View 1 (cartoon, one colour):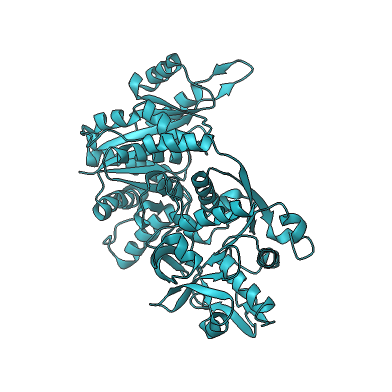
View 2: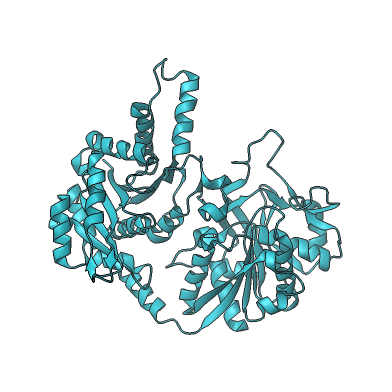
Length: 533
């Protein structure tokens, strides 16, 4: 049957247990195993789709349109597998399902309780992911920190999972902090001991422990932790601060954590782990030559995680071209036509990302105008494309009142308008165009040059669309509709014919970029900025 790895965290949050889990997933995949990853999030929101990006970071969208936690982006980038809605489970989703069943009478009058009803629903999600994706191994990260009230039902469910699935079909990995006290010049093990004690009080005995530290950990310290936490000496691993994020994969490989996992599962490896591409990538990253400055003009730049997949995609393209990417984070609320030149003067490329609402749009429009008029490589994503169309309509096509109904619901020239979405009695969540859609690309375009084919699939997350009443006006101009969804009659990409590189997409290409395989549009955008440098 499918094997399950459960990754928990202790002592403090933000330990990087998702990165550790992803690195393990990559190692197991490189051995020929089919790996799938899953996140149990303790928050009561059904999904992060209605959360502020400034509070929770970006919303990562899967092929099937699930709005998920940004950790799923790390999973996909590390294991290079497209995940789905079975990968993202929240407390909100669990309670929503149980309450819906209770209202239908499925529980036949029983008193609905956390145990067994909530925990059974959580375990059902473990079974569902195996049934729908048929992996050899599922890696499930439990969000939060052991000791949090919110995560208790999930921890109880994975405790029960060992009884239900068996010892050699389940593996518990506990990721803890081992602090270094500079004044005493000592690494302290007591927090880890207390964290494991807390976990064991919940009925979970970790099979392996991963120690997060800023310093290398002596073998004697590992053996001390193994003794006090009642695990084997060879089941204690370290995750030390690294220069390059992907070194987590190679460092775990050097410690042979994948072999220890296969031994526990009593599984034979299909082949030797092949991590050569990761060693080569790391070496490439450490020997980058020169740099380019990219202005990211956004609404949520105070929290860089709000644009995590975009910043990672820019880095991927930089690795491809052997260039450092310096992102200049520009708050769109603090720029306008009066100061945009001074703000952008040292940038070789301008990117306007997605967003919602009317706030900060004038700053983004100013950046788009500057890129267009000064022939600076420009990349617009989602709202960035919509505003690029509005800017062009106003300043080139002379449609002075051109606007989006998201900005002005009463605009006389709705270049961008509401195609789906919020009626007065409709919830905000789930009303967007979400997930993978096809796009047909014109052959004489920069988009076609990037992709090398005329049919593509990309992920979406938006509520407003280009208004096709204005198609003719644009098609006779120097702005090309370079990508179109014929099935739904939707504009997906635009570009300027006589510009160095001015491309914008309604979809989110950042969700499909990978460190070993940068997205074609990001790759060509960075190439254009290098030539502009």
